[in-house]
Length: 415
Image (cartoon, rainbow, N blue to C red; front, side, top):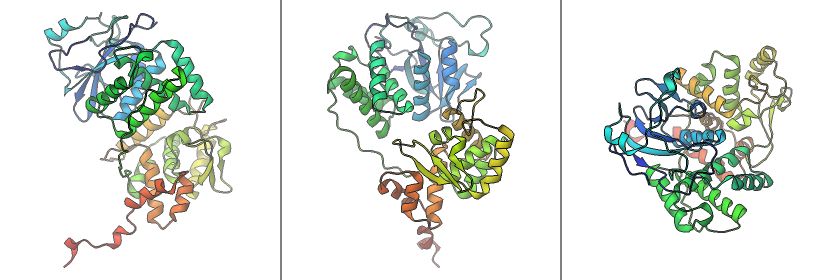
């Protein structure tokens, strides 16, 4: 078991079955709080980990602290976990709420095995840090057979690729935490894991619910057991973040790159999810009718949304310049542009537009619905455009729309 070090690091994964069956050595990621709502991440040099970090939106190398940094939010941590899983490299983590220290203390160096430094010429990524040797109890996986069995079960039930990756990453995390093999886990182990996520990681109700769903699916599909009897936490009733029309247009028009401007403009003008933008094909754009055919949206449902008249010229210029063959937005290899790339486009545009609040590309979809409601569009039509199964989901925008609130005069303004 790994004990807490002198600078207050708290290991998240402390026990688990033997790692000797893993082909890839396990590394320890040291995660510390950092200024400006970022996390600092240190690790022994590994090109695969560097590649995974580069996939996280707004990640960067900070030479002042000799560490990588990512935004301090659940989405960025989830993105890193999924990226690490895709590399086949499984890492243990230790977390400290304190600021990133300038150097390790002697007591820290003596409490953990010291790995070799990065090879000569490795440049800025050569960060000395402790590592977990293969066979240590710092992290674990239930073995390769469960992955193929779970992937087959997920595929048969037509789960989306993102959900499949997320579920497998959750089970990898869970197996790394518990002190017994995954096959022997009981309800108490699941409760302990969920408690750790809430206390040490600050997981939201939706994150906890997704973890419960993944664990329940894993045991029912792989082992044929029902070990999950945990009551699900109540979902947080948060209002969607909405940009003003002026802010949304500033974001859409800030990129110099024509493709980037069109990506953001379609996201806002049609209210599409980022995954839906990524999967748009040339044949999905009907300029004659002024509609966009969204295929296999959330819940594998098709729908139509609006193609703004003001976008038709921008779209024509883009098609003439880029000449995509299959996908509307293609990468260098001709495949559909990755979701992380689309998110990175948004973050850069929001920064250039001087947006001070914390926003994501999904806020453009929220703003689309809210602005339609403020302009007098019937809620039922907005529900159809967004692809919501229940009108209750769409009704949340009535709480943020200013259409009726603007008619109310504050008592502070009365003379």
